[in-house]
Length: 211
Length: 211
Image 1 (cartoon, chains in turn green, orange):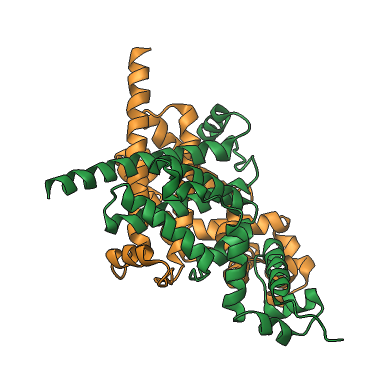
Image 2 (spheres, chains in turn purple, cyan):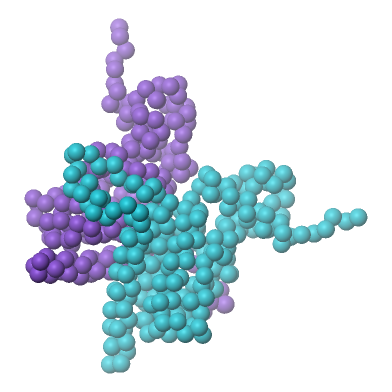
């Protein structure tokens, strides 16, 4: 009897194994994946397009956790609420895999599903009236603060251990109170971003009306 | 002849070796440091306070690259210009060691030199009139965007590879032009942060005057 071909299942298993390795050690190698799956390294390469292909499988797995419904223009969500929903969901997805952040941030995005995600975000901002040259700096700035905050969410609640030499730091930490340290900082950063984006958009709309 | 005791030098060598390992592989272990220095693991533990102690040595090395002169109150730099100078220098320091970011962000800050750095930042914001409960969320939000941007600075200039399925993304990328992609996003995020911080401070000053 011929062995059944299950390429889709294999790609899923490769992806899940690679993500697990990255979650544990911040890195992966194709031979490690092969060892974990009990197959030859060559068999892994048979299913994926090299190391870069595996990175894109990892990217798809993490990005599957992000709700990008809000970004869909036809839903009619106002752009700022849509960006906020997306940002909160994006942060939660990467907070589950903080050690994947440096890997995914420093390799080019090629996964079609993830590129489609960006296409939606660009469409939303253009439809909202943003100037085209502002769109990618806006999205990148938002992603940087999301991913920085996702790493912070993986940090201990007590991130500073002040001493008698740092009384002002001790006071400022006590003034925040316990719990929600990372959330308070993310909410502030997101509010700052959206407020500035509104100003940019109004400026673009004004120049557009005058042209 | 007795072997000369050089604890300071040894701590420096341990720190430099650990940072080198983190730069290469995103992680370090004390046995790896010992191997690299050609000594027994026990000898390393003789000089540092465990793994946490090594992390603080790494933190000091990276933070030594940050100019915090501007944060010194007596210099009289306006708070917003001081934060901006600090943020740019902070980003450049961590952009040189992007793989150290997750490690340092997820372990509590204990190095006295680095705590002193935060003490200066808190003093600056309190003197500028910020409400005490706003200070740590502000500093953390700023750090998150700095460290997110530092990772982005380590990313390739071409971070997206759009296809015929993503024409709007392709257009938005072309509109930014070549070069300075990461800088444009960081400048935008920093401007958004400072603009929001000014509003927060004016609100606190207004409430302070009314009390």
